[in-house]
Length: 372
Image (cartoon, rainbow, N blue to C red; front, top):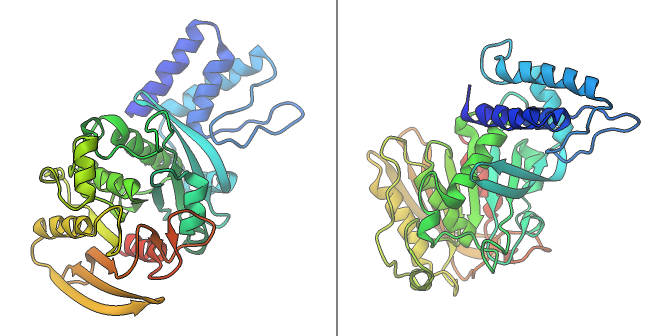
């Protein structure tokens, strides 16, 4: 039994001790993604709440059934839902919905996009981390990632950083409390990714994260703290993990001068693959930070082939440096976009911090993530 199931059962038993069968049933059903129909109407499609049964006897029956289902392994013994059940889960979740992830470490609101046509046998997840002053809908519009999800058949989650956690809505990449495993925002974000992976039957090599600015910096923190969860990350206009420990040192790091050496990734796990974009005209986060992220990736690799080339993509000159295995698998991909500022390149109008010129960062990240 996983830690998540133990937590669910513990919460359910707390409600049962209070003779609140309805609440216990809802907890268990929510963990299973079940949405039973309420009398006269369908349960709300929130992804996190289930409609209550009509009577205490019906509730007791539901509680007994769902308690049995959560404690017993599925028929195939894999620990995951059967393929047909997974297909039903994907179909039921299709659309762009608002959800809340709950854990012992806290709660996190997020938007989830599930395309109408999504393969049940090889689903991928991309966790998209917005920049300061942004929010999920804005970030989704600017990056155009939902359209790519329709095209390639993957799921996208957009966690929302509330102003109560940071006055500007930034992920706290520069705060030591949010730079370590099993603590702070990395714990919440990794927990969300793992929760969605269980719900949608996503393999460990198909979980990715990407972000802009503070979101890009937090994506690199996730690569450092949870290399066993995230197979690859995309960092746009971000900073290397551990580049700052305080707000004051963050301002220095944003100018390209890190206050300290970046923290190391877990030695017991493979080094996370990274694709990096940075404009050399960025006045907010100096392009030197992108180079530091790539150099750090290079220092952890052996027996690689590095190739650099200059080209023009969608009206912008680009210097692209890739670091590949001999078999051609890309381990790190660094794009310097000349003349580009602090913005998501090749983005869509309607979103903030977007530049429509230059390489399509979203499409290139998807290509990088989904390669085998």
